[in-house]
Length: 588
Image (cartoon, rainbow, N blue to C red; front, top):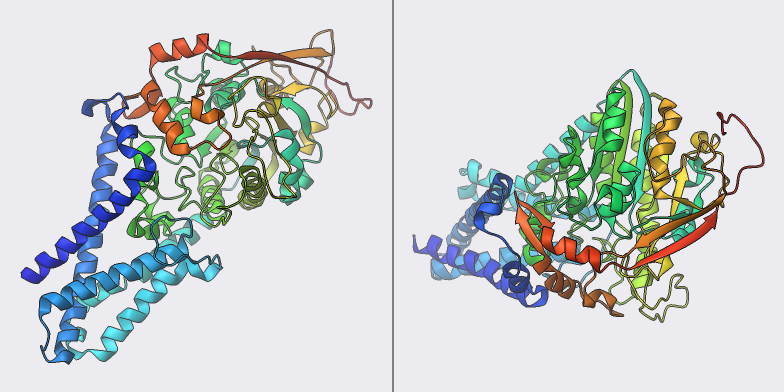
C-alpha cells in the first residue's frame, strides 16, 4: 500500500509542477478571474468535458501505476530484494515520466514542457509512442517469467499500439464511406487572414486553387477585419451595421440567410471550422452537420498551454478516437502545440465526405492556419519575424487546402464548384532581418485594429472557373465579401435576395463606381504594439466578456459602448465589365 501511496504522491506532484510552469507565462489567474461568470453560466457540456478530461487523466494514472508496479516487481526479483521497494517505485515512476516528456518534446516540438529540444518532423515520428510501448511490452514479456502470468496487466502496456490500430481502422472505415447519387457539391472555403497580396503565395502552394480557380479577384474587400463578424457578412450578404454582428464573439445572434436559402431548396448543409472559437454559426443556425464541437467557455483556458501536458498531447494523435473526448487538443487551431494542418485537413475532409448526401450539398468550411499566432505543431520559426511566420503559414494553408479538396473532389458528383475567399487581411509592424520578407511593415499590426491600414481589409475572392465564366465583371473589379452570397444564390437558383452587396452575375446599378465603408473591431492597447503579447491581449480584453450558456460572449452593454468608439473609412473602386460575353444571363 505504501508503494501505491508513494506513486500517487509523485503522480500528483508532476502535473502540479507543470501547471506551476504554465501559470506565470500565461497570466492564467488574470484571464480566469477577470472573466465575468458564475458556475451556473457554464453548460452541461462544459462539465461533461471537464469530467472526461479528469477521467482520461485517471485512466492514464492507473496505466502508469500498473506499469510501475510491474517494472518494480521485476527489478526487485532480479536484485534479490537488496533495495527498498519504495525507492524502486519512485525511480521507475520518474523514469517513465521522463520518457513521456522526451517523446512529447520530440513529437510536439513547440510544447513548452520537454526535456530535449529536438526538432523532428518525419512521418514515422507519429508512431513513436506506440513503437516504444510495444518494445517495452515485449521486453517484459520475454525477460520476466513472473510477468507472463499477468496478461491483463501486460495488455495495458500495449495501449498505445491498440489505440493506433483502432484509430487506423476508424480512419479507413470513414474514408471508405461513399454516397451514391450526389448531384452538386458547392463549396465555400474560407482561409483566414490571407491578404490580397498573399493570394499568389497561397495559390503557388495549392494545385487545386491554381487550376480550378484560374481567376481571382484581388481588389476585393471585407467591411470588417475580424473573423466572426466577417463570416456573418458572407452568410447574410449584409453589412455589419445591418446584420448587427460587428465583433468576434458578439452577443448578437447570427442570421442564417445562406443556410436557410439553400435548405429551402432541399440542399444538405455541411458546415465546419478548425477553430472552435469561430464555430458559433453552425450551432446557432441549428445545422445538423456541424463539423467539430462549438466553442465552449473552457476552451479559452484549456486550449491554451495550461494543459500542454505530455499525456493529453500524445493522445491527440489518435484523432478519430479522441476528437470528441479531448476537443481542446485534437485538430483545434486554438491549440497550436498539437495542431497539424495536414492531418487536420485530412480529418475534416473525411468527416465532411461522410456527411455528403445524395442530391445537392453545400459545404462551408473555415481554415484558420494563417491567423495569429502563426505557428503550428511542426513549425520551427520561433526566432523569425511575425511576417516571415505568416508567409510559412500561408504556404502551409495552400497545401492543407489541397489535402482537403482532394478528398472531396474525388466524390462521384455532377459538379464540384464554389468559392474560396479570405475573411480579412493582416498587417505587420515588426521590422524584420529576413531579406525575403514580403509583408513588412505598417504603422499598426493585426487585423481590424485600424480602419486606416487597408491591407487589413483587402482580401481575395476566387470563384471556380465554371462560375467565373458567367460573371459580368473582370478580375480587376472592385468587389466585396457582400457580393458572394447574392452571386451564389443567383447562379444556383436564378433568384434575387435582399443584400447590401452586388450580384456579380448582373450589372450592379447604373454606375461602375463603387464605395465601401470599413470599420475597426474591438482593439486593446497591446494589439497596437510592434510585438504584441498574446497573453496580455487576453488579459486586457477579458473583462469585456461574460459566460452565457457555456459560451464566452461580449457583454451586451460593453458591445454598445464599443460600437460608439469604432473607426471608419470609405474605400472606392471601379467595377470593370468583361469585354467578352459568354453565357451570361440577362445582365440588364
